[in-house]
Length: 196
Image 1 (cartoon, rainbow, N blue to C red):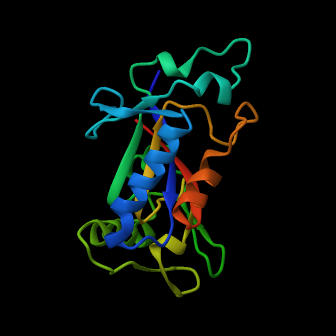
Image 2 (cartoon, rainbow, N blue to C red):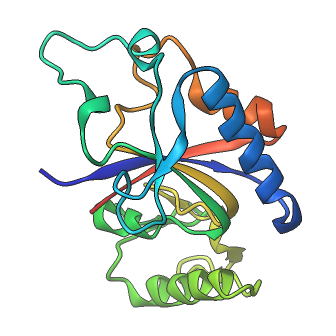
Image 3 (cartoon, rainbow, N blue to C red):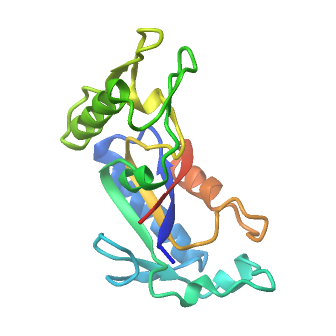
C-alpha cells in the first residue's frame, strides 16, 4: 500500500500573508478538534512534520463498515506547506496537460509541453514568474497554473496536505474542510492530490 494525500491549495495568497493565514487555519482546526496542536515529525513523508487527527475526528467522520480508522495510521498528519508549493507528487498519478485555450490534450511524454511545464515549476519554486507554456496545437501561451491537469499542480504560496485521510469530498464527512479553510483565509481553494 502506498501513501497518498489530498491537498487544499489556497489560491492568490501573497507570500507575506501565508504564515499568518496558515496559523489561523491551524488554530481553527485545533479549536474544532479536527487536529492536535502538537507537530509530530512521523506523521508526514518528506516534510517537517504534521498535526495528527484531533479528539473530535471520530465525530466529524463516519467510517463505513469495512473501513479502518485513518486516525490510527502512523502517517496521518496535516502538513502545512507555507511558501511556494507545487504538487510535485501529483506526477505519480498524472493524466496529462490540457490547453486552456483550445482544449488539446497532451500526455506527460509530450516534450513540447512537458519541458516548458517543468521549467515553469522550477521557476515558480525558485521565486520566479516565468510560467508561460505555449500550446503546440493552437500556439497560444498560457501560464502553467491555467493549464488543466489532473491532479492540479497548485502553484500557490499556501497549502495543507492531509496525509492518508479519506477524500475530503466524501459523504462520510459531516464537515467541509476545504470550505472551512476558504472561510478562514478569505481565499478560494482547490483540492488536489498526490501519491508516493
